[in-house]
Amino acid sequence: MATIYYEKDIHPELIKSSKVAVVGYGSQGHAHAQNLRDSGVEVVVALYPGSKSRAKAEGDGFCVMNVPEATDWADVIMFCTPDVPMSKIYNDGVAPRLRDGQLLLFAHGLNIHFGLIEPPKNVDVAMVAPKGPGHRLRAEYVGGAGMPALVAVHQDATGQAKERALAYAWGIGSGKAGVLETTFKEETETDLFGEQAVLCGGLSALIKAGFETLVDAGYQPEAAYFECLHETKLIVDLLYEGGLNYMRYSISDTAEWGDYTAGPKVINSQSREAMNGLLKDIQDGTFAKRWIEENEAGLPNMKRYREEESKHPIEEVGKRLRAMMPFLKTKEVPV
Ligand code: NDP
Ligand code: MG
Image (cartoon, rainbow, N blue to C red; front, side, top):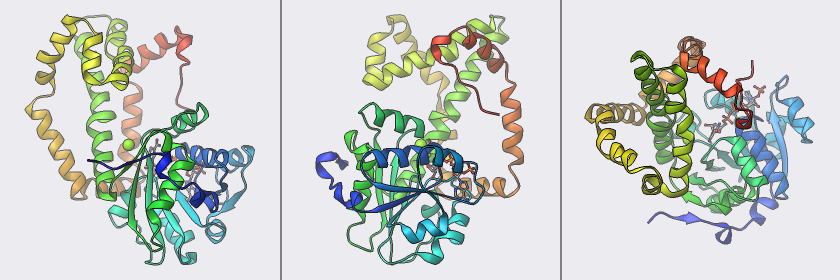
């Protein structure tokens, strides 16, 4: 059985008596910093000189330090910057100033698991990885709920690494929802696989393929949009609340029959082979190597994908339809 920690298992004083530096003030960083502060923890935000996020963090009332200064000040350092530049941020600003017993925390295991960051033996190294986007992490906390998180220990110098990480998880509100114990390896591999095969890659490709099939067959793009994209949310809400069987209980018998008989034709043995291929590339480091190379080359393919995908017909029709549904509180990618 998996080990899951809740508030009753956690000692909040381990974080309340610590000084915490949250490095980065983006999606995760702003939520960590604000949730910790509201939990009574002393927090600073660490950024580089000239960071665009500086004004935002200061506007939210935080003391902002440069990364080296924050490393000197803090007992606990949480890395909430993008994963690729993280090893440089660590090597330049953090590593040369580390002292005995500090706790380094990560919200995703990639850098530690693939050996891109190699901390010295005299510090604790652990992970607190919330299982959802930063803006939701903050919203759940404000609403009195919490977001589940994963906890893992890579290195325990003080003998208290896990308890300290759990106390941090309490501080961001995850003790309310459950903190599942895992390893850096399991978190890194399952997280990358999940976002590639299911949550982001798989789902986007499924929606687009369904939309294109209908439009190519002569149906109105508006009808295809409602059917293949808009309605996903309604189905996912049912899955979230009650799992697959509750979703099937709630839909029509005809839809349920379609689920059992058509699903395996779409996600078939070839799709499963592709999933195994993705997993293998993640496990043996091929994916991480390619992604780092793409970054080092200045993201040429990423830029091309962004450009092409933003012009897909489903985006054009969706934008028009969402504008007619103000209750959706529609969102646009900031320019
Ligand atoms: P973001 O891309 O939102 O982080 C951007 C922040 O990092 C900005 O404040 C940026 O400053 C700052 N930053 C960039 N470079 C530096 C630097 N050299 N020194 C200090 N700060 C810097 O990251 P995420 O929140 O998406 O991800 C953070 C971590 O959380 C990652 O490990 C990720 O894998 C993990 N994670 C993310 C989730 C998510 O939902 N996004 C979910 C779970 C885990 P500026 O504004 O100047 O660019
Ligand atoms: Mg994830």
